[in-house]
Amino acid sequence: MKVPVVVVGAGPTGLAAATLLARYGVECVVLERWESVFPQPRAVHLDDEVYRILGRLGLAGEFAAISWHCHGLRLLDPDLRVLAEFRRAPDTGRHGYPRANMFDQPDLERILRAGLEATRTATLRSNAEVTGIVQGGVGPVRVEVTDRVTGECETIHADYVLGCDGANSLTRKAIGAAMTDLKFDQRWLVVDIATTADLGEWEGVHQVCDPGRAATYMRIGKTRYRWEFRLLPGENGGDFHDRDRLHRLIGPWTGEIPADELEVVRVAEYTFRAQVADRWRDRRVFLLGDAAHLTPPFVGQGMGAGLRDAVNLAWKLAGVLGGTLPEQALDTYEAERKPHARAMIRMAKLIGTAMTEGGRLGELLRRVLAPRLALFPGLSVHVLDSETPPLRRSGLVVRPRLRRTLAGRLCPNALLDDGRRLDDVAAGRFAVVTAIAPTEAERAAVEEYGAVLVTTRRSDELHHWLRAGRTRAAVIRPDGTVLSTSNSLSRLCLSLPRFTVRSNVAPTP
Ligand SMILES: Cc1cc2nc3c(=O)[nH]c(=O)nc-3n(C[C@H](O)[C@H](O)[C@H](O)COP(=O)(O)OP(=O)(O)OC[C@H]3O[C@@H](n4cnc5c(N)ncnc54)[C@H](O)[C@@H]3O)c2cc1C
Image (cartoon, rainbow, N blue to C red; front, top):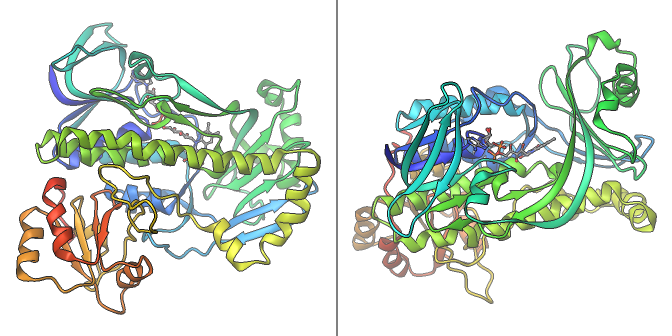
């Protein structure tokens, strides 16, 4: 069998990558070792940037139906007194979606699977364990796969392989990559409870900043609640299978609710780590998601990073396979994504340290700094702002070294004049956003290369965004990232042909 792309692993990253590729008309096979969705709840939060990716997958409505608005963040002292509170309104942010959303990972994986099936271009094969990935000097990559039910072995030949096979990635080993340790290693207990009883708690994330026992509590759905507790030396996850011990731990939140009204969905020990693979690619084989990076979950961004990898690579790969982008476009994947993933891991480590650090530094962070954060509107806006760092310079991010620029940042998914959002109009293609009225020749150039032209008006969001970025026009990539900016539309149009990709997705009418 020969396919353009094999995706190893049907976790959130693999499902997203395959669906995006399929929406560009690229045929791919997803190989997943297990029969169905992995049932253990893990990720519970995603931000509006990641929600926007679900929108690109055509799954925003489905996600809205399974997610829960998060009211913000409270930092609590060891006696659960509020040190600081940062409220988040349920309105939509610059990406057109709510900024903090709670959910249950198996529910999300179910809608991702349904979205993949609906494409008909991608195939998911369950019980298919990849046992080897071999790359010769030329020709396709050989993927060895064993059917876990029949025991039959098969070789699939692929032009490209995407290793989305999680933390213990076989793909990573196959390309000789290794994880670099970013020095974070803590054991935590993760508790998921289902109940119809009302806990009566504030419906945001509660971070208990206690070097004695740091903890996180949050409501993640109508009847679902999550706690995470740092394990103390000598404790292990198994100790809390004892009901009394578990109920003593969650008692401050569950109060008088009888234990038999609290269904334990699971109690498990996790070691939270911070690691990044030393390289994310060997020729035609790429690493994405947890296979490429691991973060402690304190800012709820691990799965989001995998979805960001998928949206970054899919259009480039589709362009290369379709012959409209040069092979070198693929070099930009690691160059752009690795520094971004590292920056998000650094942020997660910082929050983790603030929650758990003992001594004078921890005391200073918690007792002095935290209560005062909310007094400075600028600072609290920063705490709540879900904007992530811009992508670094690459062949597909044209950033001058010394000038502030929009290049590398995400363009807002703004509402346009006709009531549609930018992403619905661009539908996976390049867009040129301009405050300069285009000439006929410029219009024709944009159209000829399959890009979308969006002309702003003085009062609209994109006009203000360009002005704030001190420019008059920008090329937006299919993943929403600004490729380049200019005050000359004709100069921008000149750069367009080299970067075109054609999408199969129909723009929203
Ligand atoms: C307690 C906890 C809380 C978290 N909270 C958040 C959060 O709030 N927000 C967030 O964004 N992230 C969070 N995360 C992280 C998130 O769960 C992971 O980052 C995410 O699951 C990674 O997705 P993935 O698809 O890259 O890998 P995985 O989900 O691990 O999927 C990999 C898939 O590959 C398959 N596979 C592996 N090897 C093979 C093989 N050889 N052949 C075939 N198939 C194979 C596996 O069966 C699996 O289905 C949390 C994690 C934990 C543990």
